[in-house]
Amino acid sequence: MNKLPNKIYKKITDLCMLGDRLAEKKKYSEAINVYFEALDLLPKPETNWDAATWILTAIGDTDFLMGNYEAGRDNLIAVMHCPNAIGNPFIHLRLGQCQYELEEYDRAADELARAFIIEGEELFAQEDEKYLNFIKSKLEEPEGGW
Image 1 (cartoon, helix red, strand yellow):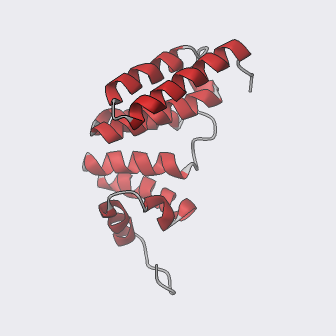
Image 2: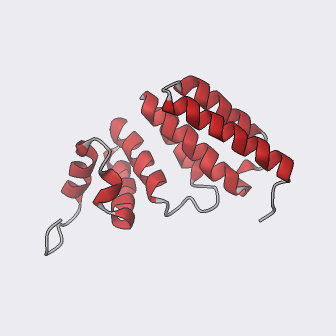
Image 3: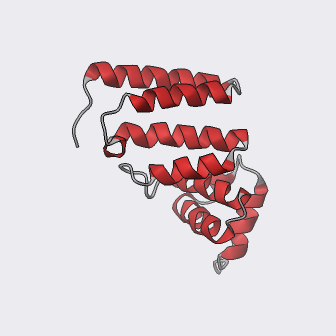
């Protein structure tokens, strides 16, 4: 994997930190615009870069927090084409949550199961309990219980 030039990497990380601050203040639309500005700095194809993984994850996460589940799903599916995304429990969690909200229950179960198997209940601790209840209803309870 090629390394981004320091100048571009610094600009991307600065923009993402700004986007994170905006998202923390619930200025979601502004945050998404800043994240896309960072994404636009990546050489094509963007999916070849590690930075695309965290930028698109931030966009998909922010979409989810806004209740824009379709955009969240689409951005998080795009992340899966980026380095080190598959197997990241948070990405699987957010994608599954978006799919759940879109009533794509089979796909949601797949993604939420991946998140649950990798990270366990702790990952779901700050989330609406409906997601954990949903995935537990789809998985076989282990002998010792949950």
